[in-house]
Length: 308
Image 1 (cartoon, one colour):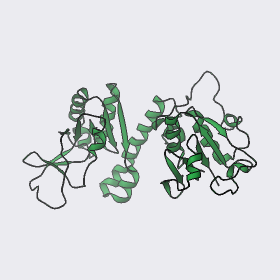
Image 2 (image 1 turned 30 degrees about the vertical axis):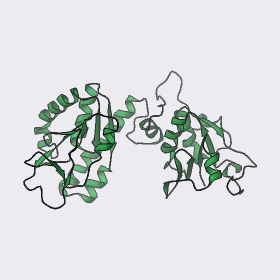
Image 3 (image 1 turned 90 degrees about the vertical axis):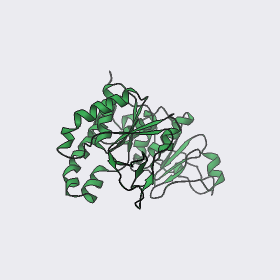
Image 4 (image 1 turned 180 degrees about the horizontal axis):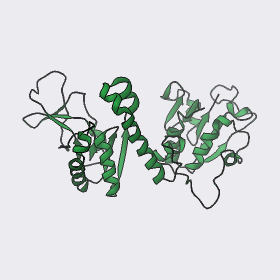
């Protein structure tokens, strides 16, 4: 089941349209036989009007959910919406909730109570979208929606044994990507950030978070400071050669390395991430391919993380 607030437009002949372009149902149909879309709905009198895109297709059905997008109807329709979502989820194998959305948030709540597996798609910054680009009603609703999203993050952190602060930091991002969480509560005192890095000497402090993230995902730091290290593609001085080292190499299972590369990219202090199965990430550029054959050859079996 897919849950979101968007009001799909239903024509008299049963066809369904969107005035915001197409919707990626094919992504979900890669792993599901069929998708039930739980969302708001509106009647469409004129399917020929400009700007409409057909969004119904084989394997996709649409179920109307009462609107929760408003101060009054959010409470007036909540019981009916909850009952409909519960009935749909009882017949579904799993939930994909697109947030921020009132229907998506309620669907997650229903799924949790029914022990139904679910995934969340967070597609925008709710505060930015509502406060900076919305109407006056959006500005009023911005802090409410922001609080709901933050509460959902806190609930995820609590379930996965992470520090509960409502912020999607490195460990929360790793857990969302499928990495192992590091429990906050344990029988022994929680190590300090510095203590957790003592086994890797000579690492630039800007990489401490990357080391902690790697260890939380069950990966091993296989290289840091190497005094005579050079760059394979050009022979210049490698960031491994500096002390403290401005680079680390991380290794583990193929799946864990891919998850780690994606999770560590974009973290504070990280400038370059290289892992051949994923590509090269550069601050200010994003993910690209690896142009150098030598670089691609040398980064198949580990993830290289760099800071300048």
